[in-house]
Amino acid sequence: MEELKKKKELVYKGGGEERIKAQHDKGKLTARERLSLLFDGNTFQEFMGFATTKATEFGLDKNKVYGDGVVTGWGKVEGRTVFAYAQDFISLGGTLGEVHANKIARVYELALKTGAPVVGINDSGGARIQEGAVALEGYGAVFKMNVMASGVIPQITIMAGPAAGGAVYSPALTDFIIMIKGDAYYMFVTGPEITKVALGEEVSYQDLGGAIVHSTKSGVIHFMAENEQDAINITKKLLSYLPSNNMEEPPYIDTGDAADRDVSGANDIIPTDPVKPYSMRELIYRTVDNGEFMEVHKYWANNMIIGFARIGGNVVGIVANNPEEFGGAIDVDAADKAARFIRFCDAFNIPLISLVDTPGYVPGTEQEYKGIIRHGAKMLYAFAEATVPKITVILRKSYGGAHIAMSIKSLGADLVYAWPNAEIAVTGPEGAVRILYKRDLQKMSNPEDYIKQKIEEYRRLFANPYWAAEKGLIDDVIEPKDTRRIIYSALEMLKNKREYRYPKKHGNIPL
Image 1 (cartoon, rainbow, N blue to C red):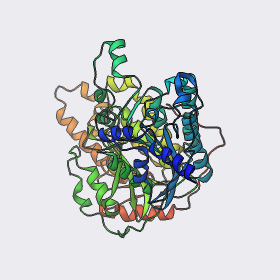
Image 2 (cartoon, rainbow, N blue to C red):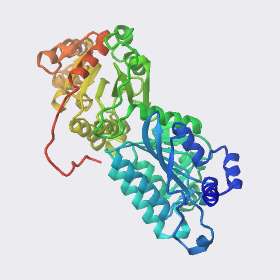
Image 3 (cartoon, one colour):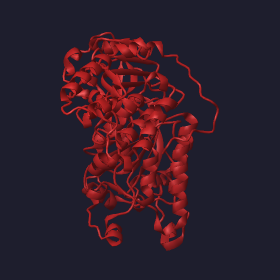
Image 4 (cartoon, rainbow, N blue to C red):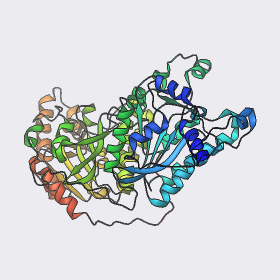
């Protein structure tokens, strides 16, 4: 028993008191301290704590450390079983070797068998150089488990330290990345030193791979945290919206917010001027339970808004255009942002609500050269592939290919509603008139009055939802204040929806 206690103490201390102090001096917590914040009190059960490296090169046989740089186990998060690993920077720099990788793979094996989410806390010096190519094989094993678990159990990564090279790709293969702001936290494939040598380009660690860069420019991370406690809080909140696995429904919570209430101020929120912006986020807050909306990718591709909420206690995924950015037009990043979110919701049985106000795709050579055709197709693919309940509400403009991309009946939407001021057409009024009456306009010396007249005629035809409703393209035209009640009613009706696809190994989304 004394020997057991001594060995357990060595396991818990990891690299020792000096390294623990060094970690604290950086303003960072140790792996076990992070896990204690994540899990409910006294529920975390560690396994493979005595594991050590098998390698003998470069003195590793004389410096074996229990745990091999990663703490692994399971416990309860708000009463639900969750598996986790936390790389331990105070033990061998949290570097990944063969045993380290095997421990992470073991987390995934047990999580997949039991149908429980995995939370990874990354804080590592990267591949363990002393183990050579064996360490790279370890990364491969972890990446494979990330892929095998994709769409089966939710995977969340907290970036709580540095990550470079191969270390960045396991987080990238998971569903959500939460990254902490600060000099001690960064991730990139190639660091500033090699960037300078290879390209002559000087850049700081933060400007190359900090949380602000990845949340605003690259779109690599989904949530930016102020500190480690904030990162844990975001993780817990995110888990509260997610089922434990793809065979379960998302967790229902009685929020106390009446499902049949009016959406306050909705009748007045959209300006009468069809090009004037308004706050889509404000509309979402007023529509969902208690104004609680967990926005994903809040600072990237701001012309598209995505995130989780509840309506009548039921979890929903919201995909909405943002008229305050590009007028709500869709570009390559917005399409990518929406497509991946749609596929996640579909994998985990979360109904999709589309709130539409878009004039089309962002035009111009920049977007065409970046592949707006290919990227826009991802969104079409994602909505058409999804079998969860899909409800669309057209609020104002819904033009062209973007109209289709936001989920319409022919693409598989179950129900499509429109507000009374909805405009549904192939293109906007002025563009349509200049195309339809091109020959007439060429003959006129002063065609402006004629253009205005034809624009008004076009607006009378398409600047309302009734033409589309008469053709059966819209299920109903609704008052804005009734939007919440109608969405809730539709969700209740679609609760037992079953939809099947042709047997296949997998589709070929236009990546």
